[in-house]
Length: 77
Image 1 (tube, helix red, strand yellow):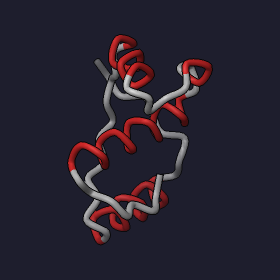
Image 2 (cartoon, helix red, strand yellow):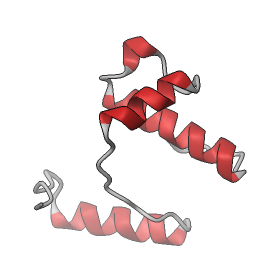
Image 3 (cartoon, one colour):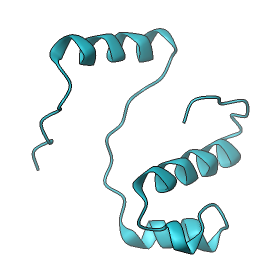
Image 4 (cartoon, helix red, strand yellow):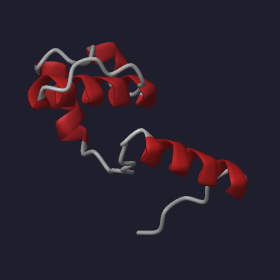
């Protein structure tokens, strides 16, 4: 499967990549099955009404990972 072409200019993509590297952040573009989104709802990390909102799904996934992996204090979502 091919990645979608970014709408950002190359210089901005490079800047973001370098910033993430400096902050110790690994960027992952992932495909999340709807069954996993449903599990985020079941576990209380995502409201059912927001299950089609990509930003809220991302936030719920970060919350879940922070809770399960013990990385509190994250300020960027």
